[in-house]
Image (cartoon, rainbow, N blue to C red):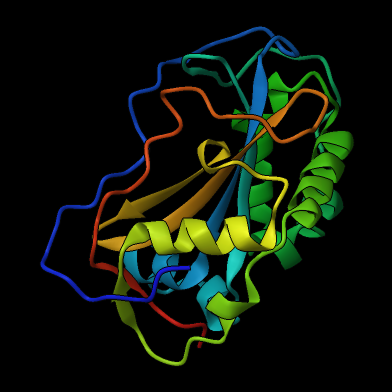
Amino acid sequence: MRGLRALIACFAVGFGGGVQAEGVAGEFDYWVMALSWQPSWCANDGAGSDQCERPAGWTLHGLWPQYERGWPSYCPTAKRPPTRSETGAMADIMGSGGLAWHQWRKHGVCSGLDGADYLDLSREMYGRVVRPELLRQLRQEVQLPAHVIEEAFLADNPQLEPDGITITCKAGRIAEARICFSRDLEPVLCAADVVRDCTANDALFAPIE
């Protein structure tokens, strides 16, 4: 793995370019699992959130049905939604039950699963990916090339290919790791509108506090 380096300022490149559309529940091509680095989320979006009072590293943002180009959302479904207790039980890996409910309402309804099964699958997929321990050992904020984070995931998850994971940035910080899985839940290469890595050479990466 390449060493950590602090280089000149560079714009962060995030996830984009996809086409969002109302879809049909259960009709999609593959899954994208998004993991958020909580210190970055708290710095960018989570000011005042109770979630940021509890130290955490890579949390589950969501498990998203995806097309080869674009993604479905808010699909009509007759499947039973998750209960309050079922969404609340996801707080240990998602930070809050509210996020779990939002992910069901936007993405889970397109999965073809009922709410409990969708959340169970989300937890299962989160458990399949090793979150690099090396990144948890950081003791101070650093600037580094975004590809260093990808390399850390690849080193600890040999089942993944470089184009099966993408690292995003937001506001100059490492934001998320997004990992692609087939409908059979095996690692696959991400489609072109997903595999758009952050190209920053000096992205901020803060430690777990």
